[in-house]
Length: 552
Image (cartoon, rainbow, N blue to C red; front, side, top):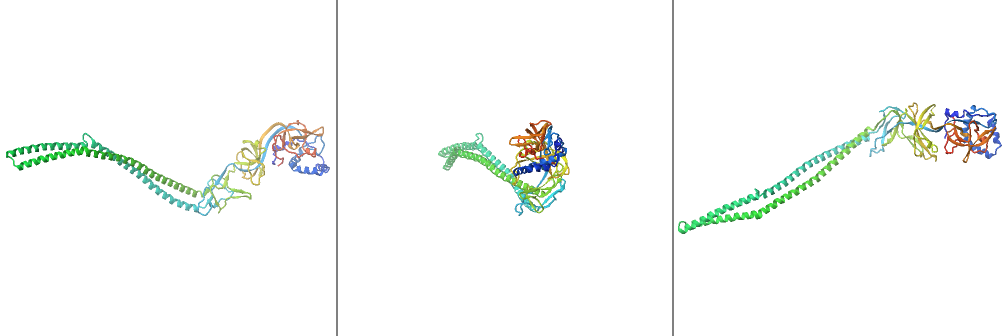
């Protein structure tokens, strides 16, 4: 990982003292000529690792001064002093808007029109500056108009059926009430008829019985009279005052009176013994039948009302669905013209693949529902999207301050902060290596101008700042296994010194043990020990990853 040095970083080497005389390159060639071919190959292998650090040292030679006790022109020296050590993590990334207004296609596909999606009739040019409400995209409406016309007819049919079902339901409610009232009246009349017939003080049976009793009494009186007249006629006939004809007529009337009396008595018996029982059972049966009919009418009414209500509800739901579909189709027709939801710059949506990236929309091409057509980035508020290596991601926390530079405007610096760090590593593409990086977003404070999405930016995240600590440039250390050392000038002679290190940035590293203030260390230890292993900048017992040293 490489990073550009700031003016603050360059002050790291302000106190370095160097003695460099003669031709340094020639001196190294003479020393290299005396080594074996194997060692030459080994030094060539580590040359790439040390190249950037060497560039930093060469650039700082003008600020070094010679130490009287060290006159070897092959060494570069540094005086150890206490200083503040800023701990930073620097990553490269790209600019993007903090607030991207996404423009999506909200028009669904019309099935059966032979086109997969909706064709684009007109499209605003990419990169155009737009204001809220400006027309961005116009889609083909022919299929949508035809679908809308069919839906209007379907909605009218559903409304007609819903009206009919509603009327039938209301009629059923009214008819149910009529049938129920009639059944209740029939029950009441049956009860009244039974009560009327059985009433002991004026019921139908008692009236009929009294009429018969009265008739019997009348017939008995008539019989008594006719019998008396017959006896008188018989006595007078015996005396010779009545003829046989008068006697026969009197006997006939007496016989008729007796017969009438017997008839009335028979009627009373019939009324009491048969007619009363029959009529009572008939009236009781009518009452029971009326009551059962009332219950049946209630059940029938309930079933018929449920059927009518179900038909009405079904018609209501069908009409609601058709009206909802009609409203949606009308809304779809309106959405065939897409307007800018906010002010910004038009950026076509881009589809990425293994073969490259390309725009997903163009005039004449069909777009699908929910497809991202373009975005309108807010160019006044920008952020940096970068990736942090897994070895240092634990240092990066939300809210960390950062300094941001943009390659297009190297003279400017922007302040910002970390707003999000991905929980999971970026899976990368099919060509991605096994290196794990975590997507990190840093927002730029305040409003900006002239910045565009996609510009390359460098974010320097300020993890911590060590106050008044002993530190040296990272290239002055050598590591072999778990042992870390540097070379200290002692009485003019380079002496190996084992040290313990702490935290580091991309330039300097904290020495927690092994060095004291004002001691002089050699920054190119490979010149002391030709077979020393490759220098590992930023060695830390915490196994922290440190960036390579580079200069802007």
